[in-house]
Image 1 (cartoon, one colour):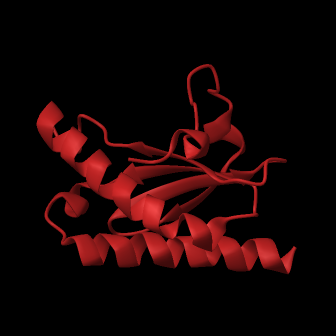
Image 2 (cartoon, rainbow, N blue to C red):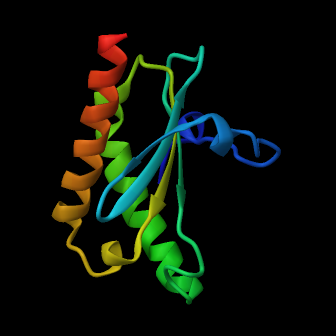
Length: 116
């Protein structure tokens, strides 16, 4: 589970998706933007279209949440706000494949921030 201080609250923040950058991957899509806060804030979303059963959605959120918790140090200090949207192929992908996909996208975000 993502630590409370690193969870992005999306309720009442509908503007986020209109202003955020977007990176597509085969397993996940990440919407991201930067804030004034030093610690990263991340949310994980699995739609009903991706996984029809709540148990599947919750399992994927827990799995991706644990991966994100491991990778928080990679994006620490950037003020990153990100929403990870899980795609259907991630349901059958292994944990290592999912971790590589998320890590690759985080590296792209870090490189972009360092170029600014």
